[in-house]
Structures are given as structure tokens and as C-alpha cells.
Image (cartoon, rainbow, N blue to C red; front, side, top):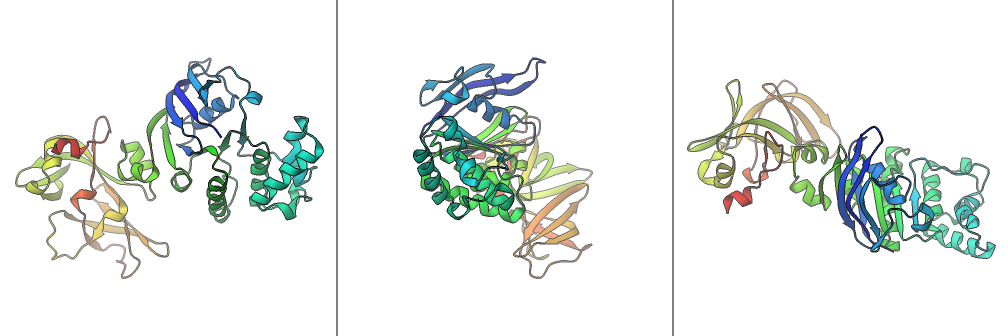
Length: 373
């Protein structure tokens, strides 16, 4: 397998549109890297530049320390799996999987050996004589993966390969992809707009927006310490609750939301880092739905407020409470037992160490650990 390194890679179209603005990162040999972001953020364009299907406007692309900017796709030793499986309907599974090898002029016996090996890995052996119309969506996806696998490329590129599947099949295929990666120890770069796919598949994630990289890290580190408000809202379902206001510090710390609406955050002595970093500033305060807990009316928590229950979504092992605090909408993730009723007012509390703090103007994270030091 191979490593992939991008250094200031840009894509600018003739009309001046910047599709990718200076992407720099490295995918280690054998790593599963996921590019994630909303539609139009540049992730597929970036993948196509790695594949050689789009020209690079500026910057350097290397595969195993070899610069490949001007190398044609066939010479890069990569294989790409597209959103559209693009299987030939008149060919069998075996013929579809071996078609690329036949174009390369490999001997029939060698093609059959590669196809059998890939079919065994993907559990397609019993389906080799079937035509695509006789396969389920998940089976067709595995054939598309097999067509890439038989080539034994140095890098696998996957462009939203699960987006045409139903929810249950997508979950199954995510598991199969993780198992396949562990078995092959292959270098894989995977594009998706689905944050759940990114979190469950990627060893590391590149979060993109508007052609720019917002953050690169492991899924759980990004979830725990999002670099800015966009990342905070994009990764996580339901999305992070965000309240904008000015931090007021006396003996206690309050977030002034305007219109005489305030939220107590706790005593100032317990929030020294927050006070040092943001006292008097306009900030955006983030709180994950699972960190917002229902507390007793007489519990007396300093970090608590009342909100109105508008909608309740029970989803089995948990429930989502859609709440209103003045003009602000919030979501709490709670256990499904003893749920409140719509129209009921609840007292909600949270631990101060669960707060995420962002500058209201730049929307970048304010690091409280740095402020404490």
C-alpha cells in the first residue's frame, strides 16, 4: 500500500470559482481517512484530483513520496469506487470484476485467480455467475468494491459508495467496509456527506466547508473538541445546542442572552478559566444534547434553567426533547422512562466541564485550558 500527501493543493475553475482552497494533509500507509462535509464543499473534487480525474491548479500531490500531479490516472496505481456502481448489465459478476484486468492484458487464468480471491474476501463466490439485475443493492456494491480490489491498487478511493442504499443496508455495508479495511490493511480515502458514516468509518476525519479544511483529527477528538461552530454543529446527531450572548461575571457567571434572559453557569470561583478567557465577551456557548439533563426543581444547581417542552421524539433506547428557551430552540437527549408532556416546563442542568465556548465573531473555539495557564 501507499501513503498520500497533499501540500497546498488547490482547484480553481476557469470562471474563478475556488473548489478546493489549499488542502494540506497526509494519509498514512494503511489508514482509513474520511473526507466529510456538506454538498459542494469540495470533497469529491479533492478525491478526483487524487485520482487524476481533475487537474490540480496549484500545490503538490504525492503518492509514496512520488509527485503525481501530471501523472495520468492509469499510472497512479489507484482504484476508485463511485456512487454509481456502473456495473455492466450484460456481464456476470465475475466478468464485471475482472473487466479491468482483461483490459490490462492479463492472462485468463490470472484474472480468474484474482477474481476468486476478491470474491472470497467479499463473500461473493456463490454469486459469480449472476448478472447485476439478480443482485441486491448491497451485493452490487460489493461487486463494485471487488472490481477495485482485484487490481490490488496502492490506494482505494471511495466516493459516497453507500448513498444509494437503504438505512439498514448502509449500516451493514459500513460494518463490512471496516472489516475489509482491517483484513486488507489498505490505504483508503472515503468521501461522504453523512456525519454518521464519517464517525463510524474513519480512523481520522477531514471536515470540509466551502473548499476549505476546517479540522483534521480522530472522530472522537473532533466530537469532544470541535475547532469551530461549523464543525460543532455538523458532527453529532442531534446537533450541538448553541446559545449566543455576553458572559457576565460577578460572584456567579451568567450568559446574558438579551431580552432579560439569562442562564446561570455556576460560581465564578469554579469557572476561572472561562472567566479569564471570555468575561465580558460576546460568545457562543455549545452544549451537546446528551449533556443537558433534567434536574429536580429543588435541586438548586447553579448551572440550570427552565425551558418549555414542545416536542418529544422517542427513538427506542432514548428520547429527544425539543425545548424552547425564549426565542431559542434546544434539544436534550434523555432516557425514555418517565418522559414529560408537551407544554410542561422543565428545569435543566449541565456540568460546567461539558461546555464548549466559541468566539461569537470568528466562530472559533476558545481554548479554556490555555486561558487557565
